[in-house]
Length: 250
Length: 118
Length: 95
Image (tube, chains in turn cyan, brown, orange):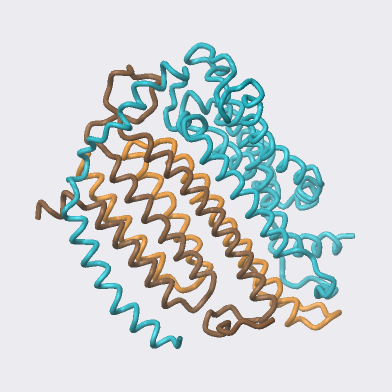
């Protein structure tokens, strides 16, 4: 439909939606008066049943672990879709010789801070990933932090190092291994007669890093997969630009 | 007046939903439309957060508080975590489609890309 | 504490409208980053630290990064098409 018709339809439907929604929102219980039984029941039980102190992580990777398995495969499939959409075609335009724009030289301070920043980011990412069952954190956040550490290399103008890390086929293999490890951790209890994704490893003491059974393992596999996925997406978007810039330097 | 104060987060969530919809409908650049979709999704975070909040409740981490304290709802926060992951994934895929559409047709405005061709 | 939360909610409403109202795409990325950080602060104030960490890493780092990469790739395509083959053109848009 034309743009005018679209705008008219929105300006009729929008206020109607807002008034109906406002009427419904005014009739909800007041904000801040949570009475539901499910959240309190889980909060009482988690520390005794799973020896984990981070309830949200325990819910994500244990009580509702099946939903997180679906979410990991959403991530995997989306990266697959992005790589198929933006794959190199034979009729790709070739880059003309010479530089396309004036490059402003990067200041020496940014290049000097590259290695310390990368070190701190990697250690912080590993800490967040390993302590997921104790304090806020977990596999997903750690994966994104580690991936942004490697993108930091590209931002500080070390393009050839970034290209060597992300164009290696090990990134794709790691992503597939991470996604598969989650499913395998779920399938193994089936051989012992336990339900799918059951927490079958000894639980350990509360407060230890190696506690709470499969939660830590699943968290680690999710972290590995998310790191590789994010690096793959950045590599796919930057493929043409970096390949052109690198062939210029030769 | 007490009515609005009792349901302020729900109204802010509805306002964000309408803003995102308005931006999506009247957008002239496909990437602008994708970012407005991200704003739309963030209105659901606000709604979920407001449902689970309890005044005087602590964060649902028992690492340093005793297990008998009242906490806010942790189940809804687990839903929000999945929601944030799905938002990032959807934006990545949509941006890949925008880049491809720009490659094939040369224009980046939604009004020029109205007919589906081969 | 409740008044701080209410004020933060109003600020988020205004910022959300500002992100939608920014029509230039490169400026909108910065507004999106600020909006993500503000959302993370709100999650933190409302006792959801796990979600706040997730929102900081995704909504304030990964999302603006991906949008900027898409914009850069589209500009690169435009530059290739407009610069004739084999010439050294020194005026392109510097992202």
